[in-house]
Every structure is written in C-alpha cells, then in structure tokens.
Image (cartoon, rainbow, N blue to C red; front, side, top):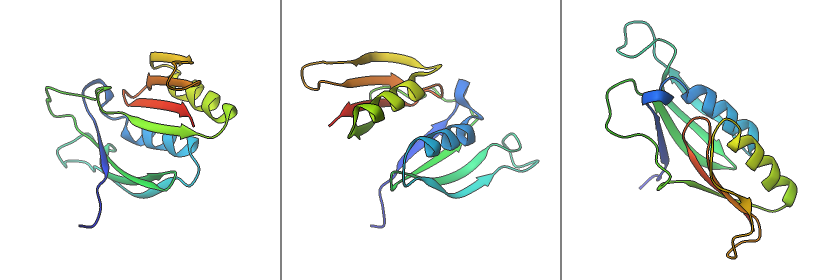
Length: 134
C-alpha cells in the first residue's frame, strides 16, 4: 500500500472552487504546498480551468481534490471533518477567524469541557473543520 489520502470533491454550489480552496488552505498551514495541479482544458468534459486532479499538502499531510460539475446526490458533510490541533491561543484564534469567515459556525470557539478552546466550522467552500487547542 502506497498511501491513504483524504479526497475532496468540490461539486454542486462548491464546483469550480477547488483551486481557490487549495490556495486558501495552503496559505493557512505551515509545511504546505501544491504538489501537482491538473486543470481541465477546452473540450475535456468539464468547464475549462477547473481542477481535474490536485495533490497538495497541509502541514506535511497529503490530500487530493477535484472539481466535478456532474449531478451528485451528496456534497461535503460535517460528519467527516478535518481535525486540527493547535499549540497556541494565537494559532487557534487565527485559524478560527480564517476558516469561519463566510462559512458557518457549527460550534463557536469556546470551552466545551473536553477542551478549553475548541470550535467546529464549515468553511466558505463547505469543508468541515474541528479546531482544538491541544
């Protein structure tokens, strides 16, 4: 087995946002970058310039993403989220602000007993994040 990766499909209202989402995520986390990015060209069955396949890293962990304009009966759901452990108050505050902007707070930043600083948000692209102060 070579690897197991989290795979993000940007579809429905989020179709066409994969590249912007990847750029946004890479800007937020250290040891992050785009490894490979393939975009659709004219006449390739999807809107030109949307993501055919992308491989990227966030804090050294690899992910894949695509855009899909096909009809799907599903989209992102909070039941599958990316869990981030922060080391400092400044870090959790920065990530909470960035990831919740134009998104949706499912659990606002606060003390929930199991953690003195925690939040759960859907970002502007529909991806769900749990952010915890370790």
